[in-house]
Image 1: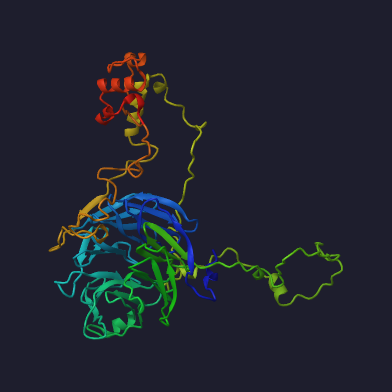
Image 2: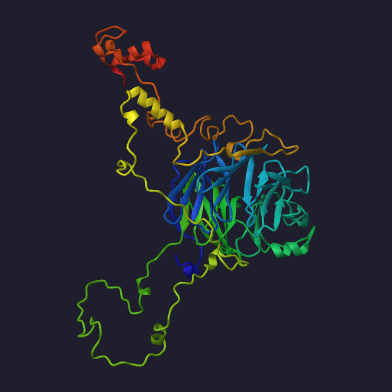
Length: 560
């Protein structure tokens, strides 16, 4: 992976569709890790699917929540993943093991969460109809951030690039800049629509490089500001946006906006259709519109941190947008020629000799002399694209990739393993089944100690309504909501609930149909010498009652 060659001489934004990622479940939200090697996708059934983005394969599936996952964020080192679901639960996950470290229960739905860019112990949570909350994971404490107007609690918030400040915005267009450690007000300004009218703040997004950030507002305009100018203006300042980006023709409202990895481009997803608009930040001109399938609605957009690649979600599928790769074979050698047809070639006398005996020894100058110099192949230089401007070295403890064990369909018995239990071999089938069931219930000594249950902390917020419904699930009180059946049924666990037509494997002491001589002989208690299916099924009904009453309605001798 030659990241030094990523600085292209042409445009640095995607131009066409480059396939899709099918998560089996309906995808709702996605986010890249800091290096772009892993993509986490939150699904409608509560699962988190982690894709290895280099191989475009699933590296891990975490059965995280029962209800749909509505927000995801990676920690800085990539070892932790914080998720929120529509049942007001925020969870922290260990990516390698898939275990839940701890949970937090909020009184209202979570609209967004974000990990601190530098301090992995802090998480910013934006509950619905509440002031933003700053969580401390180590001691499970929380701090409610101050707001401008206590009556207006439709507040969005975001960390700046290094987490020194928190920017909050409300429905009246007021932006507050708070110190992350002290929660003191540092600067503030109001977003206006040219006149004195204000507009609601929908989202705040920061670039990975530089000090720029964008504000997506309800007046369908994306405003780009310089964070340094905001801090210089102080409280009640009047900073001017660097750019105002909008769709003047269609007046498109924006669902999701973000910066490119280098901060030079801005992509915005339409709230009406699956369309992505890309602007160049420095000039403010629209450079590309990417159109997805007609009729689909966009849910989320994420730009790759290093490469000109965009991931978008619509209709539960993750779409990948990338540049068109044109093969240029003439770049391999200056005298390389592409041939339309075969050409006869006459080789020279000494062309393929190891040493040319007739060639005179010229003096080594320039490039020839440089070939004899020793090349340092042991020192590893840090990749500039993976380092921040205030860092000299990479984080060598970072989790860039996930190990994947090969799946063996029919594993052979281990010839070097311990012999099977002799007591089980000599026992009757019922005893062997019972002993096997006991072994399954006992925690495996080979797999280590049993997993401890994650600690759940209830976050109490004053004056927050507890009957709010997440926007993903529909309007409150709407009995015809399309997302009513979202998530796995309550009490279900595992993969069997997701595929209703998959036959369930026999496990443990699952009861079986009793075998009685009368049934085998063909004269069951249900009468008749028909035997076969009818006799066996009715015999089972009489003895164990294992067949449901619905089967009685059919002629058991000739079922469909």
